[in-house]
Length: 345
Image (cartoon, rainbow, N blue to C red; front, top):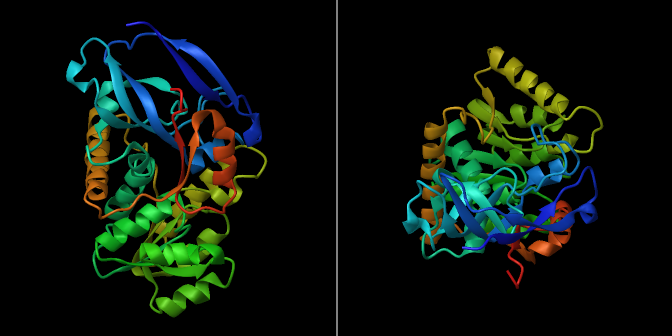
């Protein structure tokens, strides 16, 4: 097999979306334990929006190829990898590197995509689905009959959280802008406008408080999120979007957030707070991979059976990744902006 010339989108430094560079390079054959994946769909998550600002907590040094996850077809495998993988559609959590027409991925990171699920649909449930599933069922341990509050219910993770919760019989209050209220309601949540008196709106729907809050915003608003918990409730924080444009050390807002969560847990208030990190436990590699495969498999199965519906804001070719990133950052869309293979790929 001849070497593959891969098209890649490179983040060269702290730039606006239009500063992304489209390049090509020759990929070697996959090494031992690796599989070569031809990208069919990747996407724009909040991580890439932070990375272009140099604000993602542990991002690599510039320049690099972003792309937190990928769905594609295996075209070649290295030594020690089952050749039966060739031709299979798979998904992988990559953290970086997904914005490429082809990429080498450790074969044991690959999760099979059900035959009945299209690549772009599956893509909306990789990082978003793992995150939502593990927060809902792992961190919060939410159960049928409870009420939860999901911030950014029209976003990628938020819309998946809403659907998973509703499928489990959980009542959902979802924050969004007024223009996205109908979309949030269609997902099965009770929409509230985050630009109004959010606490009053939530209290009107849940006078005794909510059983869990899922907050990716951080900043001062995290105090209101914690205050809205019912006795025994859980706050799950998984980001600091409110601080994405702050200057200075990118780690400082996260460390401040950690300190606040620890302080709340030290108080005798019958409520708990935790921070969700999708990469937690990765040092125990085999256990980490098994958990990811199980959780993503459960989400993809629900999607194939029609219990979850992909929320695709737009499908944009790889070479137009700058437009995809700008659209995702605009705050005007519901669901995930999906980057698809260029027509000639």
